[in-house]
Length: 343
Figure 1: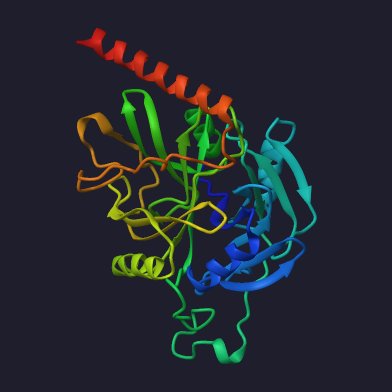
Figure 2: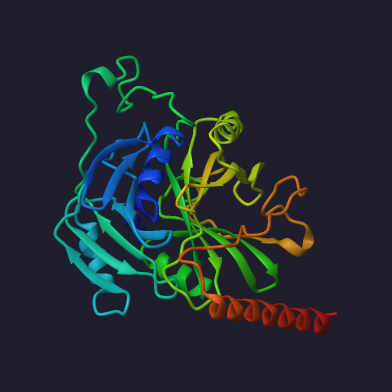
């Protein structure tokens, strides 16, 4: 039986210790639209998104990600997810409704422990008459032309202490594992997944984490229309005093043009465009071997991520960071011994 339970990554909640600065930056530099405010949260969306909101900025002590929301393919699908996870350690339970969507079932990833939620009923954005686009009615509003003009939410990347275990969990909910990069044979340092049947690149990615800290996130990504818009975004960021962390470039594993910066609260944001389109229902995940020069971080094989690019939030304390460093060293020593024995 073929099954697709989730239709799209609908929203991500960004925790910011500087919420006012983060929201202003998201609107004026990133180009998002504010929908509403409620309590300690501000709800934002890309200019071409039909849903109520795709980014929720919530005040918190340190940067991180709170809720990760997925819309289902049909009205009965949240209940299917609830039945499938009922009685497990991953189950959290039902919430009657949230701002922007209706009845919601929440759960946590078994190893990364990120908080996810699924729902069907949603509020759709209704632009005021002066902001509508009469020439292109399948857009919810006119192109804003503000900042970099982020169009819509693309993906979220999360650390996990057990990448294979979390991949198998997400596959229970219909996700497809599309690609991975291995630092050494058997040691995956990056994996991409998509919940949709036909999707360019991915809507979720995983990276390894040996800190012992759970519920962490590495970055949130939004899309623009064209590869050239990513280069333009670099100029917009610099003109607004936002340093570029990594890029522009083209990732080899999914062929997207990428650019990474950090918003005022300290969290990493990506803007991207392009990428492959995978329509194969029986696709087997491609494995890239980094040691053999395969293009994971860069399709041109001429750049590597800068120091600090592997940081995730919530940040690990000194003890956890030392544990992670030791675990990585042991991994390298183990796989080095394996490779030596094979020779």
